[in-house]
Image (cartoon, rainbow, N blue to C red; front, side, top):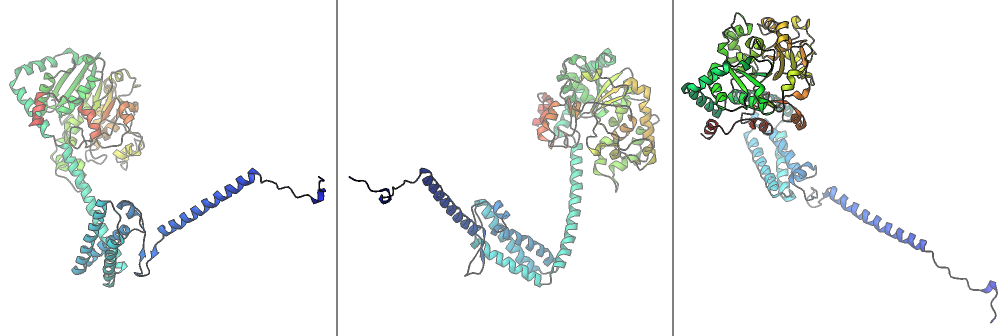
Length: 534
């Protein structure tokens, strides 16, 4: 068969490439995705924007499933509208009452109660506020608010009235703050009933048991009290259980408890109880001497200006009867207690000792403190942890530098330090006559113009230029008021200090810190168990 010429042949059908089909498929998928997002956006627009109801002429806000808190945060929700109306209505209630429009005030109050009922009902059921529930109340409150505005309660009147009420509320808030501070101070000063009970039981035992007197007399004559090769600690306090926790925590965290000697000084009222407690409890061979402040016969008003001041009736009246410029904390008995000032007489109380560690009764020892006795103080008298990481712990915070007696001799920006854990070189103390310096500044402050209260201000002056800074980990403060201390800092601390009103032996002490103190309290003692139960 003859083939046709090339010009008359039928064109060959070419097949589409596979890539063209893939491209067409992708375009179709993209088109479907575009249509889907377009429809979804239209749905969102319908949800987010209010719809005008042609019949009622009001705006309807679509609601999604959410709790009352989320709904009240939404500016388009009925709960939010009710809350705003209630706030405005409450303001007009005050104004209406001041203008003797009691009927309007009653109507506003009644509708506010209905609002509160609806909101609490929605909150309890965890459901949204519906238009049928909220709209009638919103209209009623709007009408009443408009009525109040028509009664000449204009914006200017509202602002002035609210301003006066805000000022009154601020005054009440300040008074409540002062009152709460006072109550907290009173609570921190009081001794819990179970501790008071313990003191009475121990005192009764002291008065009837002659064996205890023989034991304490042996301790008084022990040569260990004068041995400078041992580690000497001193605590001055009238709180038996607090001192016991200090002693127990110290000897529990040392390698050689039998080389520890504790020197305690208390007052006559607590002397018998404290002697009984330390004579009848086992403290791992530690030597514990107890003295009473009344036995320090050399500490007289003629020798000590602070003793002279504390015995003056006008001074005690300043703290206990109060004055117009007196802060609540000034009434704390510790500021008129001589026990609080004995820290400045340690070389006289223990004339044969060369170095001691002073501890407050509201500390807990967590690590061995004996390395402090071999610490080089570089000729200084006092080893202490500085507290000037914050600006309010500088000298100017504690002392009145407007007085030229201070401003000419001290730097107001000098770094403060803390009592509570202090290493005292008593030899250097005696050579520098620090007690005499302390007396000088107490005499200068006889009128209370240099500082108001406490032992830290005169301590800053007496030990100025004679204090060796210790590593901060030796002494961590604030467990009696600061609830946000870093746990890592507490764990690394050798001593933690419950300075502040929230003491660990009180019921309102900070719970997460209490365990640090309670683990060193002998809760198995029969007297303590009996006092807690009864």
